[in-house]
Amino acid sequence: MNWIRIAAVTALVGCPGAAFANEAVSCGGAAMLGGAQLNCSHVKPAAPPQFCTFSWDLHTMAGDQKVVEGSFLLPPGYSNVTVYQGSGFDSALSNPIVICRGNK
Image 1 (spheres, rainbow, N blue to C red):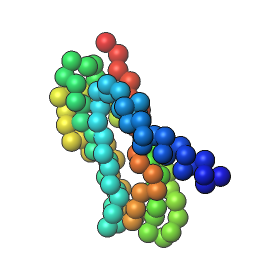
Image 2: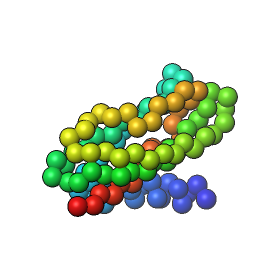
Image 3: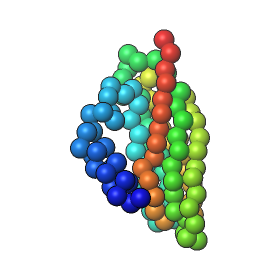
């Protein structure tokens, strides 16, 4: 089973254009020193407001796994908006998954 995960990650890393095709929202997160934070920015001024959902697999300081989820609305022009902040985490088990949708 691990070889399937390795192959999938290798394919995604080898094709970054497929995962980041013309997005209106850019997000980044980190988990360390007991806390986790996810920030997002609306990077296309001509794009409509974006309704986004996120899911993030984090490792707790107690040694457990916890998936945090949420949603947010990001208007054009907003940058470095904290969309999630939590404590009790020492690392991320995955990158945050953020899916956004906008209507004109």
